[in-house]
Length: 516
Image 1 (cartoon, helix red, strand yellow):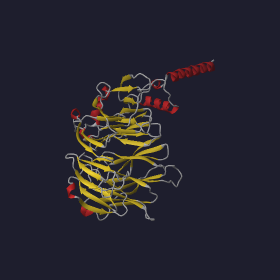
Image 2 (cartoon, one colour):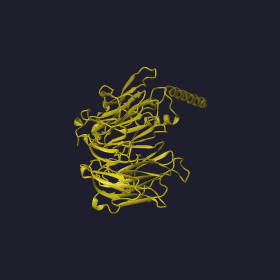
Image 3 (cartoon, helix red, strand yellow):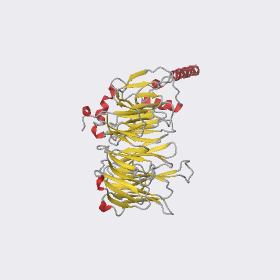
Image 4 (cartoon, rainbow, N blue to C red):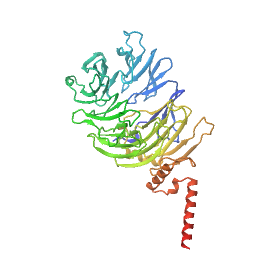
């Protein structure tokens, strides 16, 4: 078990019009985050999968690599006409895509960050969401693969000087997804063609076992697929989407969730209990359960085991997002995008709901690496106003809030959850945390802060007095107060209290008149 005193620091990357900066993450000693790295001008910033390195795209076609342990710039690449760049999972390689003038020009280059030299080059005519990055890695970078015409090419991820180690022929292949940990299998998508249905097939990455697929699933009315491997590389979730819904229930088309296992035991649809689209699906960190949000609004949320048996019903509501914390202990069910931002926090191990709250206009959302904090962000260009960051505790209490004139990006630095202590140990310090709320800046109002001590029994979201609350939200606040053993008057506004007393007096008067 990890020692919480030796746990790594949590960093937050924040990027605005001037560039990116790094904050020291929570808990905040003085109620405000301290600045770890001052603003650096850039147009884009992205961590590698394990958070060891940061890729920063600067003006003038310059890509810089930072070591996240020292926050120092360790390598700079100057590349004209660069269109895209990506880091390998452990930050060993930088992959770039440049505009090519001739087919003979190798415009996709894999660079060694340690030496700054290219280790592999190839030509690629164009780039799409399904074909970039061109070279895919397993999480430990031991296996790498690339999709080519009618085949998949495999490489030794530790030594590209060996070239292509083996080839897997799959006619019509349009997308691939290499399993992350371990990199033992690859999922292949072949679209519908000439009356032959679309299919997803699973192959072993071992050279001697690639002749036949280990599992296969076919389907008609398929425009695109999303492939999601679990930890352990034993199960694959396939979200099949079509542009047209023949039942006319959804303007956005039709979606079905399929499930395949590498041992071939399970192959079929996930038994969802409500008709309608699949809004979101996510595996737990263990790879033994997955959570799905599905159905016409109000949508339904269910947790399934790896045999597709329902384990826990999370209820119904205006939800389209599910986020499982890195420890697998807590779940956040939310409605973001064009939904009003309701959030429900669940303790999965105890099978109970902790709190409900709200984060309006959220564009991005994610748990911190230690699994104790949940951050939402309202960012441009999706929304041009009310940009800001909110950080909630695992129990739904609002811990920190900050508004920006313009915010493009806000995300945690990835760190392995194994490096942090267990949740039971981490949450002991919640009583000492303070809620900080910062008013919007640059809108003519003076910035002020309200500091309030919070505990796990407090209502999750504290709003300013007099703010409009719809009737259903007031009822939810009353139920919340009863759940946590508080008086109902604490959840009412001043006007509501005044009206409540007036109604009580009227009832007493009627009772006395009736008695006389």
